[in-house]
Amino acid sequence: MLVPTVAYGDPASSPLVYFRGLPSAPGRPRGMEVLGERLILRGPLRRHRVHAVGRPLGLERGTSMAEIAGLYADALRRRFDGPVALMGVSTGASLALQVATDHPDLVGSLVVAAGAATLGEEGRAVQRRYAELLGDDTLAVRTPVLTPLLRTAIRVVRSPEDREGLRALVEAEDAFDVRDRLGRVTAPVLVVSGGRDRFYPLPVVDDTVRRLPRATHIVYASRSHAGTTLHPRFADDVARFLGRVA
Image 1 (tube, rainbow, N blue to C red):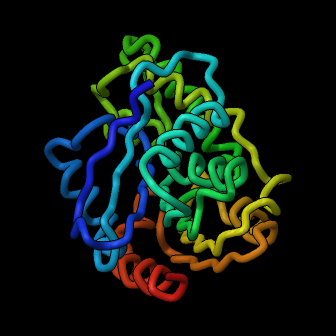
Image 2: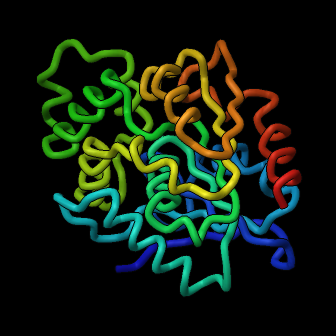
C-alpha cells in the first residue's frame, strides 16, 4: 500500500518524519493547507529535512491503528538507515505514538502536538459522529443542531480526497489506546498541548506524559485543540527540543 510523502527543506539536513492530522491528506497539500502545514513545520525546518506523510491510500474500514503504524514503519525502514526524528499532530500524533510503542527502534526523538495516548470522551464522540457523516454526508443537512467541535470538523474536512480511507482512519482512532504500552518508548518525547483541548483534554495528556519514560510537557493554557500549533512559542519550543536531543 502506498504511503504518500512530500519533502520540505534542505536535502542535506537530517530527516524528520511528520504525520499529518486529519484529514491527513495524501500527497501534496493544496490551497490553505499549504500555509497551515508550513506554519506547523516552521520549527522542525530550522534544522531538518521534513518528510510530511499523509494517510495510506486505499485504507479499508476495520484497519487498526497498529496496522496503519505497521505500514508507516515498513516505509521508514525502507527509506532510512536508522532511527529518525518523528512528529505528529492530533491523529498524526496518535499514529506517531503507535509507531513509537510498536517499533521503538525506528524513533530517535518524538514530538507529540495536540495529541495523547488515547482520545478524550468528547473527542471520541465527535469523531464517531464525523465518521457517520463521512459515510452519509446528507446527515449534516438532516441534523439541525451540531456541536461546535463537529461543525469545526466538517468545515475543515468538507470534501476530503479518498473519503472511505479517511473514514477508516477516523474509525481506527476510536479504538486507539496505547497508555499501558508507553513504557516501551525509548526516545525522548516532547508533548505540546492546549489547556482547552477537548479532543485530548489535559487529564488524558498528563497521564500520557507520566507514563512516558523520557517526556517533557509544555502546556499553552489558553489554547484549544486547533490553536495549539499556532501558538507564538510553538516553533521555538519544538526547535529547542529537537536541537537538544539531536
